Image (tube, rainbow, N blue to C red; front, side, top):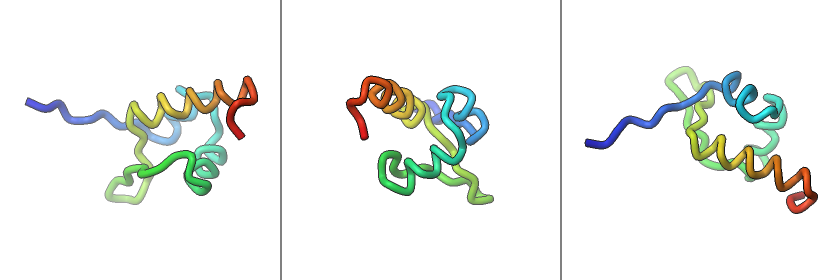
Length: 67
């Protein structure tokens, strides 16, 4: 049986990644972050894979290997 994927709110994602809401939106706008799920109220929902990717991007930026 497949487990249902757990999603995080924008607030939870900012807390887990240390990135601002504006940065999350910007990354989505320029294509760094793709296919963000939206709920019935059109709020963004971030999966674990999204958060893992954001953390990797943050580390890559810190060592100047990503834009």
